[in-house]
Length: 166
Image (cartoon, rainbow, N blue to C red; front, side):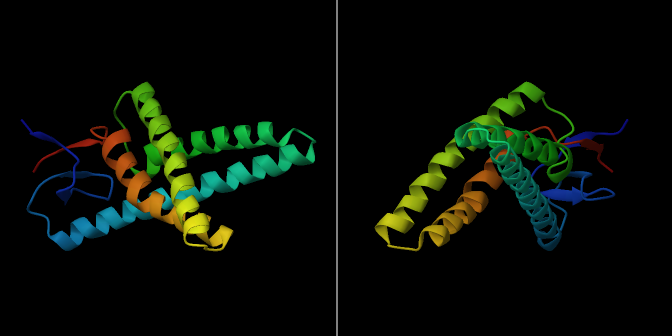
């Protein structure tokens, strides 16, 4: 009978980047490469979702939809796309209860919005940084320091594929 283990930070590659198991035998360089690949996929997911968000806002504005309605619809559709890409591809979180993951994602996203606003305010109003630059730096900081770890270890925690330990 094969023992089952769950994917977590100390990772041992089974056959590909999505088939990983708990192990301390994997060299640190391999663990680092796997985590960098997850981070890159997560950031690409965010980029795709943001592009869709902006495209929807632009489309709705061109149809004379009120800008606040357009913004809310863009964010909601973008968030749905981001959640889906991250669940199925970036983190390959095949298991877990979908409604719990969605609730956690919403809470992490709401906190992310607040952190983005706070850091942007500090950079722009406090440090007198140019507005776009301050907002972009805030987004990068929050994306790496808050969004990725919270999505990786909270939203999709325990939902990774299980694979047989060898």
